[in-house]
Length: 98
Image 1 (cartoon, helix red, strand yellow):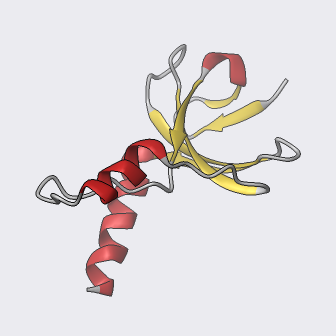
Image 2 (image 1 turned 60 degrees about the vertical axis):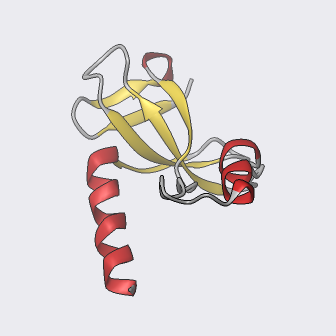
Image 3 (image 1 turned 90 degrees about the vertical axis):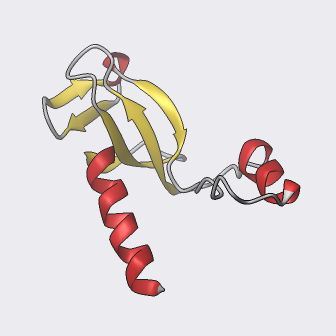
């Protein structure tokens, strides 16, 4: 059984969580009218090999969304952080890049 380190509840079995998707995909701006951008966002997903960032929802615990680093080959679990904290950090780095 995989054990996930929830930032709120501590280490918990993965059966308390549900997978929420790829945490590296960024949604296009709502004003973006390019159909190709939306097609890629909705339908095109990679099948990563190795370390990857994913959304997980702690449904049987604190009910928080977390961003988890997981190795898709070995299922080794890396760093976990609250999704809202990851979004703030991503937002700050995006603003700094502009």
